[in-house]
Every structure is written in C-alpha cells, then in structure tokens.
Length: 541
Ligand SMILES: NC(=O)c1ccc[n+]([C@@H]2O[C@H](COP(=O)([O-])OP(=O)(O)OC[C@H]3O[C@@H](n4cnc5c(N)ncnc54)[C@H](O)[C@@H]3O)[C@@H](O)[C@H]2O)c1
Ligand SMILES: O=C(O)C[C@H](O)C(=O)O
Ligand SMILES: [Mn+2]
Image 1 (cartoon, helix red, strand yellow):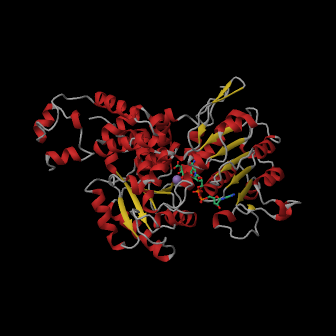
Image 2: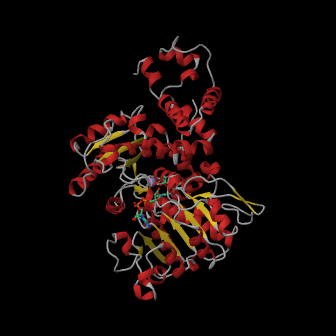
Image 3: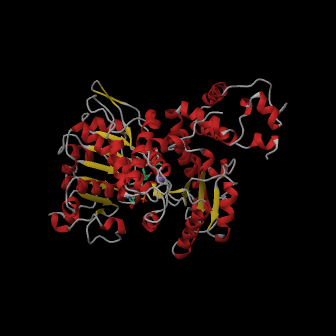
C-alpha cells in the first residue's frame, strides 16, 4: 500500500485537488491539500489557463509533460478536450524539438524502460522495474536510428515512444497504466550526441549485425514471457533493420511496424479518399514514391496489394509503380538496392532515356505519375516545375508530401494548391492550415500514421488477436478511406483530427471484426463492438 506522499507523487494514482473528502480520509491525505475539492473540469480550466500563457510551443510541451508526470487522468481529460491543439505539441512536430533538446531538457524518465546493448542480461529486470507491477498490454519500442526524418537520436528518441503512446490513449482510449515506452540504446552514430558532455545514452557508435539482432530477439522473448497479452509496436528503426525485424516476427506474435504498415495504411486510405472525390479508378493510377525507404516501401506495398485485391495480376500491378531514391528511378541493375526496393524496380529498356532518369523532374516527365508521395526527407523537393509537369498530364494529381517534421516537408500545401490551380488532392504528414484559393477553402488531410495506428492496434488488442495480418490492414485502410465528403468543394482526402476519437473507434471495430471473421482471436471474442467498448478507458475520477 502506497503512503500518502507516494500517492501524491504517483501520476497513475494522483488526483491532486480532485481527491474527494472521503478519499482524503481513507488514503491519509487529510491536510496535504488545500481544503476545496475540485472537479476535473475545474482542474482542467486552471491547467489550460496556465498552458495558454506559455508563448513558445516547446514551453507549452514542457508544461504539459509536467502535468503528464503529475496526474495522468487529468492530462488525458484535458487532451481529449483540446485534441487538435495538443496533438502537434505532444506529438509531431514539437516532439522532434524535444528529442533534439532531450539531454538538456530531461525532467523524468516517464516510466520508460531503457534497455542497453551493453547489458542484455538486464532486459528482464529493466522491463519488470519499469512496469512496476502494472498489467502491460501495449509497448512502443524505438531504437531511434531513424527518428521521423531527423536521423539517429540514440536514447533521446525515447520521446517518440512516449508521444506515440499518448496519442494511443487520447485517440483509442488505451488505459495509460497499461502501456510501456521502451528505448533500445544500441549506441548512436550522431556525432553531435557523441560529443555532447551531457548526452544521456551509451557513448559509442551504433552496434549492428548479430549482436544487435540477439538483443532484439532477447527483448521480444522477454516481452512474450512477462506480458504475453501485449501488442508490440516498433517505431523509427533504421532502414536496414525495420523491415528485417517486421518480417521476422509478424507471423509469430502480435506486432506492428508503424512506419511501414501504419504509413502504408494512411496513404492508401488517403488515395482512396482522393479517388472518391475525383471519381477515378484505383487501378488506373500510376504511383511515384519519392524516397524509397522504410515508409516509401511500406506505402508501395499496400498500394500494390490493393491493386491485386482489385483484380490485377502481380505482373500487371507492378507496372503501376515507380520508385525514386537517391540514385534516381530505381532499375533492376541499380547499385545498392534494398530488399524492399527490389520488388518494384523497372527495366531500363522501358525508357528511351533511362540513363537520364537520375532526378525527380526527369522521372516525372518520363512517367507522368497520377499519385506522388514524398518520404525522402528532402525539403522542397516537390518544386513548382516538378508539380506543374505532373499536373500537366493529369486532371486531379494526388500529392502527399509526408516527410516529417515541418522542416523536411517536400512541399507546402498552399503551394501545391496554387501551382495546380486548385486541382491537386493534397495531404501532408504534419498538420496544415486550410488553403484559400479562388474563393474555395481547401482543407488539407493529415497523412500521418497517427490517424490509423491507434485504431488498428486497439482493435487487434481488444479482440485478442494472435497476429496482425494483411487482411486486417486492408480492412482498416478502407474503413479510414471511406470517411470523406466527396461533394463538398475543397474537402480533405482524410478525416480531420477533431474526429480522431470517433474514426479510431470505427477502425478498431473493423479490425476487431476482421480478427473474429478470420478465427484469429485467442480468447474467442465474438462481438467486436463490445470488445472495443470494454477495453476503452475514460479519463475520469
Ligand atoms: N506522415 C507519416 O505518417 C510518416 C510515416 C513514416 C515516415 N514519415 C516520414 O518519411 C520520411 C522518411 O522516413 P523513413 O522512415 O522511410 O526513412 P528512411 O531513411 O527509411 O527512408 C528515406 C529514404 O529517402 C531516401 N532519400 C534520401 N535522400 C534522397 C534524395 N535526395 N532523393 C531521393 N531519395 C532520397 C533515402 O535513401 C531513403 O531510402 C521521414 O521524414 C519521416 O518523418 C512520415
Ligand atoms: O511520427 C510521425 O509523425 C509519423 C511517422 O511515424 C514518422 O516517423 O514521421
Ligand atoms: Mn515514425
């Protein structure tokens, strides 16, 4: 039993001025708080007032994190009230600033588990210590080699795991006492960190290969042993490891890679939404992926699966895809192809000027894509001339520059609308303001995996699924892609963040139903809606 002071210091138990008179008597809190008992609404009003007085976004974030560290119920109550406003502060893009300043801003470990490549023997102890007896159902783990598009951030990347979990609770309603953020510190190749005397992680280069995979294996096995009911979400691993890890475990345990699968689903949903608006056929589209890394390949794969679901053979479907990376258009003889890229390469004899296709503009000219997605981390790469070239050959170009955070975006929404005279169907990775053009207000969808991972994983967890498979992923894409208003001028291709909680529930129920239909529920769950509703936690005292 926790002592009164321990209760006040424990963010899972603390209600601050919200403890009732009876609770104060029962828990030994008499005299430890001002006498007036506040409702959660009153507490929220006070906190929001203070939050609003902070002038920079980073200060706002630090203030919210101190609330998160003090009283988690109140934090999520407030976040539910101000979802649209808080999302960019606790999550992308401001989470990137907090990661970049982690060693200098460090406040508390936020109940994360810190696993070190130099101490694999401590994995079990670490996970137990961090869980502290809690019934863990959801883990977000990062090794932070590829944080958003800002690269390798070593132990500092733990903030992305914490941020992703905040969105899970705010969107889907996972109990915040049942989640665990995990940092795998395998070293870092970030020179700035290695040279920073205040760097908090392992001060050596990143470890790759056998020793690294042994650590991951041991981590996964220990998670299975300690938390057999849990879902394991991988976030922001590097290009050389992310896909290898996913392929190794996806058929064996309940796991998800957000950058590969989450991003794929949200982009497929966005394209389906866009085609709803333009009234065009999916199988008529030509896809150009600019930046064929973890996210780019995940996106191409889901679009490819959809082509097949809509009746095309593998061979026919493949003809609709063009990958562009640092080398230019990727051909079967291009050097340095990754395993993931090999599935979508082209042959040089398809083009008269194959040797000139070494930059985006030349490829756009040669290919005439109808859908172009940017996951390249190259700011401004979708230039006016590239976009005008694309838009010259298609009536409603679908353009998603989704590199994060804001400083890395391939093009801004207002430019895309302007350069295409309002014809482009646009979504961006970070939130974008509405664009006014020729008397129409264009609402810009946010093609960020945050729109989908909470629903997909919550649905799979609620139905006690053995695994997360392609069928569930496809169902989720269609559930999200169906929520657009095709008749409203300037309508977004994806539903707005204000409705995140509502459509997350729809997606969760869809995925849970798919688990049931495929006979993959470990607990023989039969009612998807009930299972989702039963698992939902509400931020109330
Ligand atoms: N909106 C979302 O939901 C979402 C999801 C995942 C990733 N992303 C963003 O996508 C970006 C990439 O993430 P990732 O995890 O795939 O990283 P990654 O490192 O795996 O992939 C990036 C790819 O871009 C390529 N690239 C680099 N410079 C290039 C250039 N000049 N021209 C063409 N290609 C170039 C790299 O070679 C690599 O293949 C990041 O900015 C990330 O924030 C967005
Ligand atoms: O974190 C995000 O905002 C989306 C995505 O997972 C990314 O890596 O950029
Ligand atoms: Mn990510």
